[in-house]
Length: 212
Image 1 (cartoon, rainbow, N blue to C red):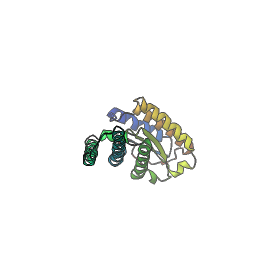
Image 2 (cartoon, helix red, strand yellow):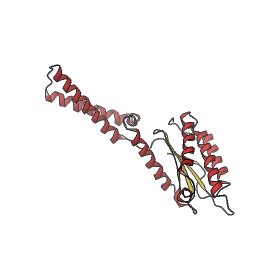
Image 3 (tube, one colour):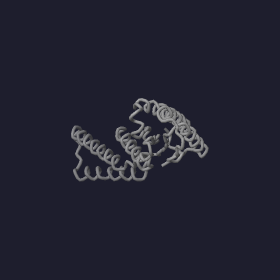
Image 4 (cartoon, rainbow, N blue to C red):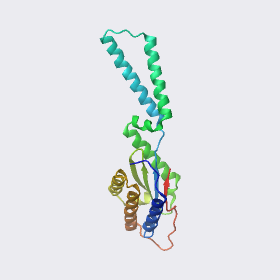
């Protein structure tokens, strides 16, 4: 997944896809793409400091093995200087941080962000509890579909897993907008099957993709 903005034309295409999908269902579809889900300064700093300590330990044992003498004040000063340089680099170049963070932590941050967006965008407040969030976090290479309780009681998780798989494949091939449109269409089919449109159905959520 490439962290870049989606063009205005693609935003229009996705809005049209949401309107078309919702035309046949009482369900609501909401799309969010995050460029990243966390700043990662503190976890990356922790990993960098641990790495510096480990390297320092290895060098200390190597010096002992080769009968080299390093005065303790000099060794401590070198460790501190390396730590300061590493922290300064992480502060000045945020793009480096995520590469020091384990993928499990990245995915947990992205999932937490998806849940925050689900709640913050009021997707859980639709009348029939039939809101669905299609979420992508680019930096973490993460996608998720979160459905409200009214849908989850009828739709198995594997259905959403299939949608996510297609979406991540498209994003990996630099076709993020196309991936979103296919995901919207697939979610629309599922919603139409279980929640066909009823007379007087109201549009409760914005029909657009949000970039954050």
